[in-house]
Image (cartoon, rainbow, N blue to C red; front, side, top):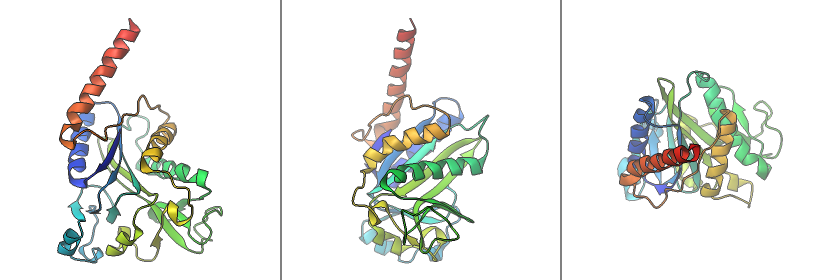
Length: 256
């Protein structure tokens, strides 16, 4: 689903509800894609000193601060960033956390490739990286002159069902990352696709491609891509259940 632009807190609660329903087998796999209003999120490994300004100052600037149960440290979400939350059952064939993280990394990499951006992994660090000095050169962590992070990953798994996911910087306000130590790493900068290319897709345009790319890596298919951007957050769960019910009825009718 494409959710449009949403605040983090209500969307996090929606994730949690879908996550529990997926664990109970009440829902199929669901992938939420969206932009967030400006927010600093604190993962389970977040350190207080990596928030470089006071919460009151952030509040005054209209930036939320939210604690979350994903893995990882501290990061920023903002408009211009594609956020993807796959709520997937990985059992029985893909019960491998590292493999799943690599699938998310590869999904982001595939979105950048058409724009001539070569990206890859950094040993010992999670996320997607580019050489800001030579973004079109084949990625090499050992030879990169200016490693820069362009995509973040943080997940949670329970009974091999996933939640949270990745955030790819298409064209967010990068100055927001100066308010934190991004992912607890101060040695490297944060960049975006817009740092290197004038041709930047909207998060909405990138979202459908991201779902197709992720499904390919998981050896699955996207049955439908729903636009829920006009649905109030409080109605999303009910709306999704209605869509799934309609789809089930249609499949039964087609079978007859």
